[in-house]
Structure formats: C-alpha cells, structure tokens
Image (cartoon, rainbow, N blue to C red; front, side, top):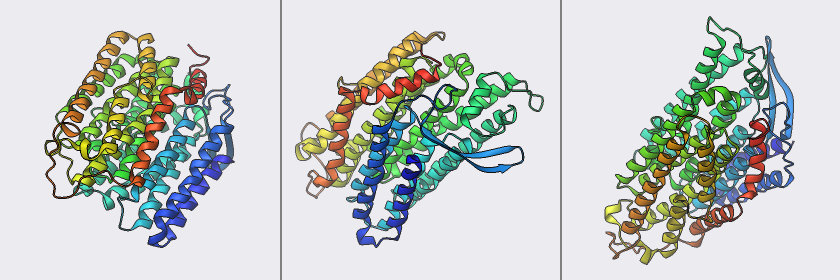
Length: 505
C-alpha cells in the first residue's frame, strides 16, 4: 500500500495548502512537498526489481489489485505497481516538484495557496500516471494532469497565457480522445474482459485479437497502434505535433515550466514504451524505419528552429524537442541498450532542461528581458547563474560524466544494433543533431553570457538570492551524479527492459 500512501499524502498536502492562509502557503507547500519526496526515496530503497508488470513472468513492485467497478461483462480494477521503468520517473516527479515549489518563492506573489496546491495536485496526478496498471485508472490520472496545468499557465503565465493554455489543453485533449479510441478498439477485439494492461498486452502479443466490425485483426492492431502513437506523440511534442510546446513553455511561469518540461512530456515517452513498444512489438518492428525517420526529423527540425530564435526561453524550449526525438530513436530499436537509454534519457532530460529554464528565469528577472540581441556579458554580473546555464548546456551537448552523455551513449549504441532497415544510416543522421545542438548552444552562450557587458536596463544586474539558486545547484549535482554513476537507475531500468523484451537481446 506504499503507492496508495504516496498518492494520499500528496493529495492531502494539496488540500492542506489550498486551505492555508496566503502568508503560510509557500513554506507549508515546501515542507509538505518533502513528504512525497521522502516517499519516493523510500520506494526506491525498498524496490526489489522483481520484474515488469506487463509480462506474465514479471511481478511489479508494491503491487495492489482490487476489484473496483463492474459493468456488464467488463470490470475495472484499482491496479497499481512500479517497475524499473516507472520508479525513476516517480522519483523525478518528486524531485522536480519540490524544486518547483522552492523556485516559486521568488516568482509567485499572487494567490499563493491556489498556486502551490495546483502544483501538488499535478504531482499526485503524475504519480498516478506512472503507477497505474489498469487503463481506466491510468486514463483518469492522465486527464487529471491537464486541469491544474491549464490553470497554472492560464492564471500565472505571461502576456499570451490564455492562448498558450487553451492551445495546450486542446492539443492534449484531442490526443487523449484518439488514444482512448485506439485502446478501446484493442479491448473490444480481444477476449479480455477488463482494462488491465497486463491482460490486454498478453492478448495482443498472443495473437488473440479477432475480427471487429469487419476489420481483420492485423488492421485492428495497426489502427490501434497509430491511434495510441498519435496520442502519445502529441504529449511528447514530436514533430509535427509539437507546436503547443514552445508556447506553453514560454508563457508558463518558471516553476511551472520546470514541471512541464521536466516531467509532463515524459508522460508521452513513458506511455509510448508502456503501450506501443510493449503491447505491439511486431508492429513496432514493422514500422521502425518510419518511426526512426520521424525521430530524425524531430531531432533536426527542433535543432534548426532553435537556431533561428531570439527569445532565450524559446531557444531552450526548442532545445527540448530534439531530446524527445532521441528518446523515440531509442524506443524503436527494440534492443536493451536502446530502450534502456531512452528511459534514462527521460530522467536526464528532465534534470537538464529544468536547469536551463531555471537559469533563463533568473536572467530574465534580473535583466527584465529574454531577447538575445539585448543581452551580452551577463556572466560578469551573474556568475553563478551563468555557471548553471553552462552546466545545463554542456550536459545537453553530451559532455562525459554528465547524465546526457550516458543516455545518448546507450541510445546510439542500441540504435546501431537495431535490426530494421537503414538503422545505421538513420542513427548517423540523428547524431548530426548533436553537432547542431552544440553549435547553437555555444553560440547562445557566447552572445548572452560572455563578451563585453551590455544589458539595456537601469536595474542592478546580479545573481538572485541563494534560495533561487539552490534548485539549480541541486540539479547540477544530480546531472553529474547520474553521469558519474548511471547505474543508480540504469540497473533497475535494464532489468525491466529485459523483461519487456522477453529475456533480453
């Protein structure tokens, strides 16, 4: 019942903060956010690595199964559990939310109780997405995430907050509808009389689907695969479904961007692994060249568009898109290295993108601008903030001993090993994206951070308070820690990935 306890503590913390007086909200939220963080560390310490939830031979850790609702021949279950893929993302969610709460001390002055309560409510919903093993439970938490995020962007966001919030909500809601239809198609074409993910996965992998409304089983499988892929691709912000991302990241306040970029896009990549790759291995292999090409387009498009941006926050936002392309590249390899690297990249990307957004937020608050052509030599006045940006940028470039290097090394190793046509060529082209990323990040640092100091503002430009810098320092240490000792998560990830692959490759 540890997962239920984690969910209950986080939900009750959100309610307590909502009911608290405004003047206590910030400190109370920070204190209460430590409870789910401690809970996630407790789960990590007690994880036994028993296996993967979606295969017959595996047993998820901390599993709970209870009959919930029955209607007709179908039954809904409260079924939750964790494996080596989902537990690192639960830990990432707890870390990023705590850092977002601390960061918000320096950004949010209005309606604090509501703001911090919505952050904690988002955290609880994300825990549910990563822990759910029944489609109905998973879908409820998936939809719950949208509401607080919409409000956080629409109420506390920038000048175009309404446009960005509505666009984010419409995109992800349409995606949810399509993926829901895709999953229902599989359930109704199978002999399974529940929405349990393990049971549905076993039916699909065992070729138990039957004709549904005149559609042959192979057609049902293909339609369901692409319906689910569309839904998750929108959430992941793969090209061409990415256009909500730059607007939402740019208009959201920095603490919310931390959660959006650090964790929310991982809902899509995690679900691609949990649903598409795990349930439809043959379809994944069949369309791997197409999906690999889409990954390359995502990497190169995001990289080149970032070069053309003048808004520092939009540069970082577009920097996020190539990383999601690398994750997709790893997922379609269907190898231990590729899938493990993709999962590790989800955690690494959350840490590094959060670090970059924190640095950009600090620069904007001190200089009152994010325009690259109005910033120069910032490092001379804001050395600590500049150091945080440099650390995040080098992590993104894949500097050895940082988390990005380990993630990309595993992804590219697995991608070169992949059995689909032209895998080596696709991998080589995708690797060119790293060169582009390194180029524009170095160019951005050279223009904004270094050179003669010239910032058009009457205010004193200086590093923010220690409380504002502490989350960035924590993320730097985390990025280095994961880079030096990737096995902190990689061991448990590979165990579960091998179970997904049916014994390893």
